Length: 151
Image (cartoon, rainbow, N blue to C red; front, side, top):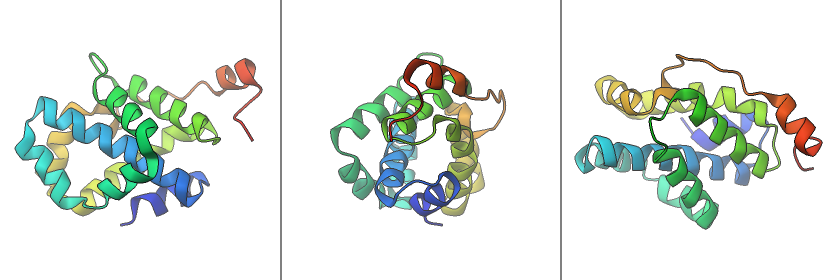
């Protein structure tokens, strides 16, 4: 499975936008896994997703910072993760409400690349992958504050 391609298709993003989003989400997951489960498990992500480095280069420093923000949120919960993904989408000029679709796409990608037990362990430290606690993104907040995403 091609994660940027799937994100592009589901969210209507350009190839560049979808690579940045993939860098933030998977990079953030990798940081969180290294911190909470250790480098051996994070190394499994590196081995299974060699294109992560290319996505991170495409995203540059901003993607690295957002990935770290996603990884190091205190007491991370799905709703906070989704809110940060919505911020990233907004920064890319995309509709923030699409953040609700990202976890399913990322989980399918991880299930395609990793063993089921590894994906289960990842979901323990990244609850947004489980689909529980589903909280829709409040799109009215974005529209009221700014008139919608940048064009």
